Image 1 (tube, helix red, strand yellow):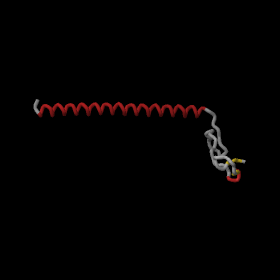
Image 2: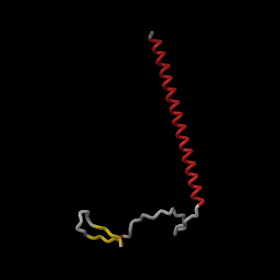
Image 3: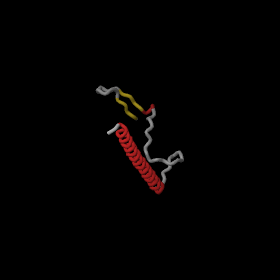
Image 4: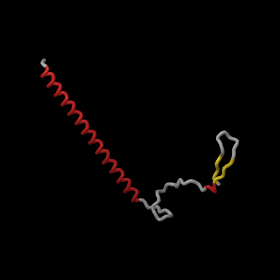
Length: 94
């Protein structure tokens, strides 16, 4: 085989590999797009379910999520006591 024949054969192989990569990328992007569509559909469906339930209003006039608030306790309500344990001072909320 001559050098030109081998070079032409390798060029065709390179083109085939590039085509395979592009096809694989196309399938990957189709999968990503399908997943996004399904996520949008699921979020929309959850929104419809949530809209069907009666709304709970908070004391501030807005809609409440129903989740408890995790704010820090008032410093006046925290008592710090010394304990003889190995884990340092104990904290208690009045």
